Image (cartoon, rainbow, N blue to C red; front, side, top):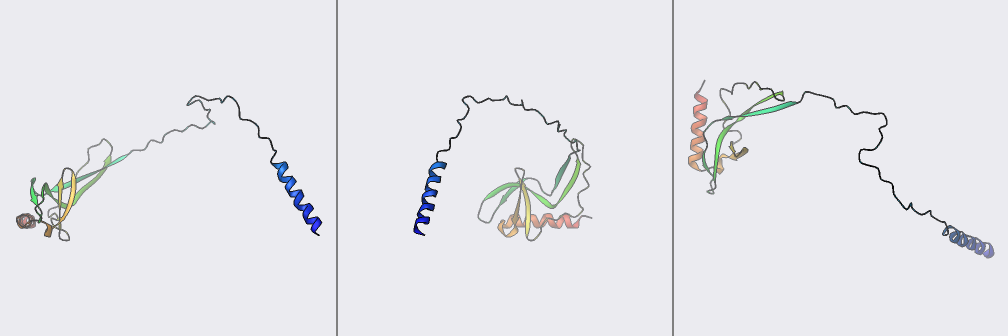
Length: 149
């Protein structure tokens, strides 16, 4: 039994030595490059599907002129007060959109916050972060808008 085991192991070792002698063909000496765009088509052409693209126009309802707003910690911000009600219209690209009329009573305060636009960026600020004169100004705007029919 030991002899057959030894012969089997010797056979495996000789197989390993034989397999290590496999010759791998050398790589070609010169690679052939083909020009960009020189591939052949498989008979398939890609034709772009023309769709009418739409553009989304968003108009903000401005409630005040640009003014200096001050936070409770003294940081200033030059911005306009805008309503939470935006006018959104989708129209074909290049066409003039029909913008609807602004709401009669726009939302000035929502969840204790106001919206300001400065440098084409919209900021939502909590009323408690504004100075007292700014809070009074917001309340005047809200009261004036509420009185309009």
